[in-house]
Image: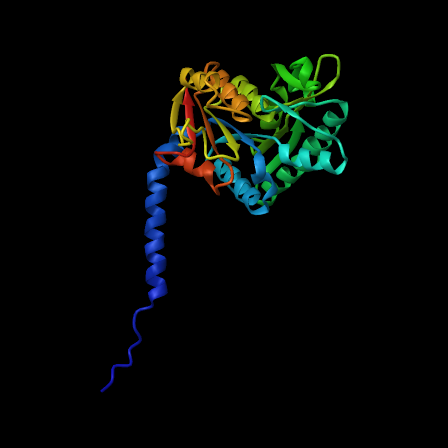
Length: 297
């Protein structure tokens, strides 16, 4: 007689295997989850990843996961490509010196419109849609960042003078679930609007909050050596040498300078990583090898 008993359901077995692997992954992440519980992590979100809807959703999901695991994420965002596109649409010329945008009065007005307006609210909405409770603010709000003109040749490009995190503390006290999303547009003591580099803004906020880690998401896989190979671990002193010898160029210069200042002023470590890779935040924080380049004192 022919056996008509159906074979075991392969999909169920596959699901079980996936379940075991997921459990193993979570178990391996446990020490890292415990290590970061209650810690502040400042995350600079920027680059072309912000223009990709799926990457923005992935980023928002990761931020909500960090919050659910007891980490205090503070988001600081840039928007260089978006500012550039708007300047082109308005036929306003733009130039860079040492990786920083030269900001005349027209440029800084456009930067504020783009950063504190469309971009800030789009990130807030993405996090809220992922189940978080994001609140958008700028460096101007409650005097979070007071700045001064960085250099005469950079126009209204700002350099932070002081950070007053009271507005972040008030948000946390009002509701521990709030996730701050900060635009780096700031003001001088005289009330001038200044365009502060987002990496720099994230760095000074991380210093003031004594963050456990500062994560700088960018458009490259990390810091590269002279042969364009990824450097996975570098000291502050070695990072200075990369700038002095010209190995680090363009936008990597302010990122490395931010990292150096941060680790020498209370931040445990800084990581420069590729924001174009989905879930880089999770890989960096919850795995042994991390992602990108770790800068430490």
